[in-house]
Structures are given as C-alpha cells and as structure tokens.
Image (cartoon, rainbow, N blue to C red; front, side, top):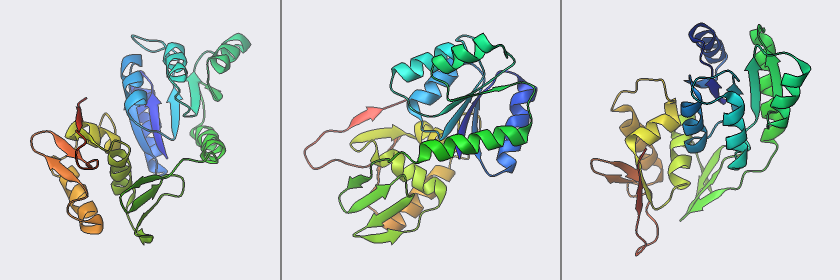
Length: 229
C-alpha cells in the first residue's frame, strides 16, 4: 500500500514510518495540515493515517476539506483524544476508522489492511490512450491486448502521466508521486523509469519537455497545458 502519514510528532512519525516500511508499504510522511492537503489534492494514496492535533490546520479541518473536494481515500484517525465525543466528531467529519494513542503497530497494520480491503473492492475505471490500456484495480498494463510487465514505480509513473494526458508534469511532481514528500531522490532515477517504460511501450509514448518534465501528448492539434507544483 501507499500510505500518507500525517503526524507532527517526530518520534512517533518516524517510528510508524519505519514500521510500515518494514512490512513493505510506501509511506509519505508530512507533518502539518497544509502539507497534508497539498499531498491529498495532488497525489493518490491507498490509505491516509491522520493525526487530529496538527500545526497550521487541524486534522479534522484537513479531513472535512478533503471530503468536500470529493476525496474518497479511506482515512484512519490517529490521536490521543479518546472520548466518545471525539470519536463521533472524527467519524462524522469523514473518517473511516479511529485509533487512539498509545497503540500497537500490529493493530495499526491490521486496521490499515482492513480499510484497504474494504475500499479496494470499489471499481477504478481503466485508462486508455491509443493502444495502451492501464487498469489501476488489477494493476495491469496492456498494449494491443498484450500484457506488459511493469514494476510498481513504473506503473505509478505511467498511471500519473496517463491520468494527465496533454499536460506537462514537472520532475518534482512525478518524483513526489513515486517516492513521497520526504525522500531525497537522485536526479537520474526518474529518467531511468521513463527510459524503461519507453523500451516497453515505444520511444514516442512519453515526450520529454526540456527543462520542465514529461508528458503524454493528446491527439494532434490539441494544446498541452503545463501543470507545475
């Protein structure tokens, strides 16, 4: 799973991130409400773990705004507030589960798996461009009805580009979609992923925009729009 962790406590946040990484999950860790909203609005996650007591914008305000904008990603609230009123307020604001501190990592993992199972049953439409069909639910890519094997990060990169056909995406945006907001990414890593996708789908499938990033072009005659972070 790709998990957005929103937690301002350095010790707890680092411990949760390390624990989830150990079990094979990709964790994007942000530490305030402003960064949380930015991540939620620009990236795709399987589950969000959200603390209520955040700097700048409270966790409940983040949750309400995300739901108002149509974000349906399952959210687990992680907080020290454990009264019935607090639980009701969190769930009424759009949370799907509620876990109080202190907690056991195994219980957090079990709850995240349950949320992912429940919400992954929802059908995600396939994305088609020219002769390539990407199915986010099945995690498959086909070209001319032939299955193309893509590792997870190449799949996410291709999905991000196909969801934004006709738009130029900056290197920063694409790196964030692959590795999260906290990681320091080598400048050549993205180029390697693009190179690998081109080898499998054709050299012209992804276009390089010098000094900016990459895009998948629309049909001839349609102008592209640059979307910078």
